[in-house]
Each structure stands twice: as C-alpha cells, then as structure tokens.
Image (cartoon, rainbow, N blue to C red):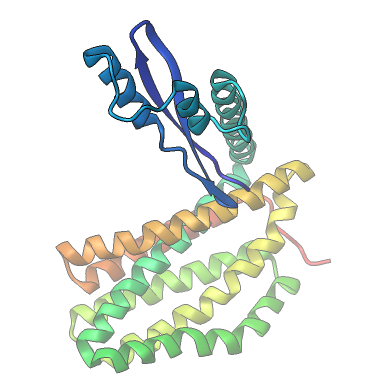
Length: 288
C-alpha cells in the first residue's frame, strides 16, 4: 500500500496566510518540493526591504512549489492530499477496529505480536551472550542453530495443523517456549555450560516452526466474514512488523540496564502471556 506523508509549509504574506508548499513522500516514488522556504524568505525580504536578491517572479516560485502533476491550484492540491491521507487512515483504523471487535481474533493478534516481541528480544540477548563466550564464531554457530533445525523440522511441524486442533498446537508451542526460556534464564544465572544455552536456542527454533502454520489455519475459523478475515491478515502483518521493531529494541534496552538472563526471563514472561491469550480463544478447530 502506498504511503504518503503530507508536509505543509505555511508561507506568510503581508495580507495573511495565502499559500503552502507540499512535500509528498511515497514508497513507490519520491517527489520533494522544497521551494517553500525560498518563498518564505522572498516574502520576508519583500516586506522588510522591498526587494529580493534574486529576481524570481512569484508565479515561478508558486509553480515550483505546486507543479502541474499535483494540481494547478495550491489550496486544491493541499485539500486533495489531506483528504486522501485521512481516507486511508480511516480505512486502516476501521479495519483494525473490526478485527479487535472479534474477541478471538483480538487474542490471536495479540498473542502473535507477543510471540514476535519476545522472540526477537531473546535473539538479541542470545547473540550478545554468544559473542561474549566465543566471539564471531559463536555468533555464527547461533545462526546455524537458528536456521538448520527450523529447515529440517518445518515440513513436519506444519503438518501438525492438519491432524490436531490448531489452538492446542499454538498453546503447546508457546508453553514450551516459555519453559525453554525460563530454563535458559536459570541456567545462565547459574553459570551453566554455554552448550546448554545453545541447545535451548535450537529447541526454541523448532517450537517456533509450529506456531505460524497453526495460526494461519486457525484464523479463517475465527473470522465471521471474509472482510474480517482480510483485515485480520493485514493486521497480522502489521503487528509482526511492530514486533520486529520493538523486540530488538526491548532486548537492547534490557541488556543496557541488566544482563542476558534478565532478557531471557522477560522473554519467558512474554511467551507466558502469549500462551494465556491462546488458551482464552474459545473457538477450537477440529480437523476435517
């Protein structure tokens, strides 16, 4: 979805506010209209000294600020951009409201963002721990532990959703991750062998491969309408992006004020919260 940011640069005339400059930033194209400050300076010098160092007609400046591709009239261009931006915001929030109006979908969405948040906070602390133990080689080993077990187990764990209730799979996986994280935190606090921490990372990865397929299969059974399902899928992707941003930030912040074991414990608490939300989903899925 194209994102547009409207920045209005108000310019003061001697008779009041008359025009504005527009900067439109989009994901599929960038157009910067930075002539607004020049027009502000132009008007200031004209009002103070009655002249401008460079003889640029006002019509040329207005043409630079509001090129024909936006609109020939500045006020119409501004209103059109604002209207489109408000319309997109309204559509986004109405879709999110429809998802959160469904209690089961709301719990599923919140459980997912909790899973992603705790997972990435844990990965940050795990990488720091690995570097402290064995440098870059240990960090590379952690990367292999995170990828190879998941690549092997993913085809089999995804088949579980076709044989067992999807909610139960998510509950068992989140509970297992909580216990694994708690055990890792305790082992790290007790100065256990690093091999135990690395093995626990592999268990975390394997359990994680079962969550998303079960979640994707469960969501259509929770949605009451096709539109609600569409909004739920969009919201799920948005929440995942938020978790990908906030998870490492949370891990880094906790590492700055505490230790790796505290981050592991915090991730265990977040996984416990995700398991609690999944347990409260009332609509269970039975395989056909």
